Image: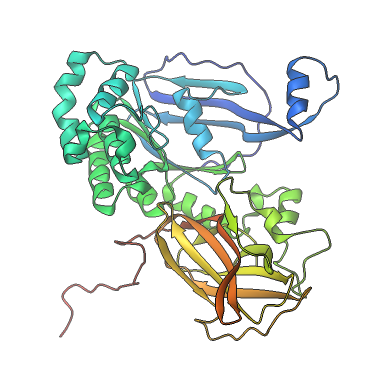
Length: 450
């Protein structure tokens, strides 16, 4: 077991390979982004016109080091924003490290983002040849593998249609079929497999097993802890850009669960502990002055907002069973959706609601105050209500989107006062997934005494 703190020295980037035992070596790698308050500050600095520092530095990765031995299957886990996908992009050369060495020895095939490397105007077949050529295969080599790719993707006649007509599921089937069948020495996979249906995922994991038996190297990111536990020889845990654990999958998962509920002190700086440890609303249920719950969550650039605004959702939060604001939850735990609504006029019969959708936009579950038989009194200009919905989260592991609503009846007509679609992304972390969206918590007994 290795538990890591912060490292110190910086080195220049190196991408040449040169080791027989290790397929991947990451040495003291950092990736730093500059965050500007104003776009003009970025321009002025690029032109050398601003002598003072006008940006903040954000460490996506902070002096991270690890090795992946040839033939190993290694999983990377961590909360959203911990640097998992950034690490994979650095290893594959999509991004350049700010400092440090990355050494890769072997042909890489990577499945990082849905549709990455695909041309939407090309057909599936044309994209197979495009991707194969980008990886370094000749047309003859792709010809030899084409039947296997088409058979694995199993998308029928769509293989001859432009990929812009594909569903997200078809996209990932074809992308993974290409990545898995071009005989890579190193396979790198991000969370993209979560887009495919459960049967295709099983098919992909069987291919993982074939790769392991063939001595291939696999590095992948997943929120599915059962997959990490089952397929990985090792697991790496990242948190806020720092690597805090590298070792057995079981212990990595145990530490990760503590991180999720802010109970792993070794990885928490005093500033982080203060921010993450605030109870949701404190003892009085009120928020400190000038401090909004929603400011703790990243803004969704694709947020859809509309309504008459007689009632407005002015604040919102997700709260775990320990009373902490977060967007990461363990499957089977309790969590609370909280929102504050302010009236800007008369609302005679207000209704407050939430829904949860998957990343394909399908509504999975939700409820409202009327369904829960909680009467809400009429509201007048300046009135405020805080409403909480608490429930057990038995959704399968993965990414979901939360939507909030304030509706009601006015003069006998249904009215939409304020809706926020896809306002917060939430992650369910699971070490046991079943078929479908929802876990029925079945138990299984072999040869019961009848």
